[in-house]
Image (cartoon, rainbow, N blue to C red; front, top):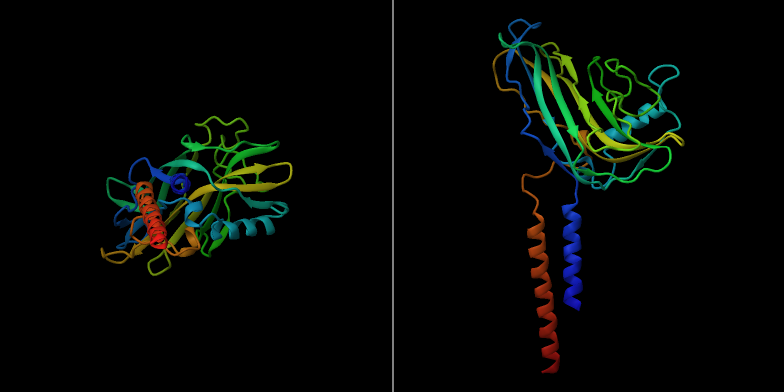
Length: 303
């Protein structure tokens, strides 16, 4: 009976490990355009590099909210973007713990003349399907939404805020934290294929010697309660890109997101995490060793 209880416990822990939300890429994402002649910077080379996180934000932040998102939310909630706009009075909660996975399609590209191999701007494409995610039940006045925090220096200085005021969308409400660029983002009665996410951030290249133009994002699937102005984050992903300019066709610096872009934790080591079968085997071996020691102690006592 004792061994049966221990085995059940190990299998339960293995089940928890298996339920960790993961990021699944439809195909390996393209993360570098390669060096091209700059359209606006004569004799210079332009290159766009991107990253697409392979672990969910819940996983990276150990069951907590990514700091970049929290800071962006606080900025939006406390300081209106324009008079009469912005948050104020919204409450941020964390629900976390989704099961299933986000199916991500992502790539980096450039804007320019592809036949001539020159670039005037860099961009990333990202789309996310959630048909493999198990959704929690909604309560009264609740909606599933996407919500995205962005940090960029498109205007020269670094800004950190929620992506709620996008002029490329047909309609948006800057006083609502929901990401505005998906007409299907609200789904009271969710159909698995309606709550997709898509974004196409892009920017011109900067001048040689200036800091690279960059864009970083934390994107969460969330529940918005419109009656009490509450946003409850579930889980999400991170991605970003930077535009590089060099004087010669030389190696470019590797794009390494800062620790505060996707999580408060240091970058994961290259050592792969053990899979569930390994955890189970290790647990069963431990049970056998513990049980054997108990039997030996009993025999010693009898002797």
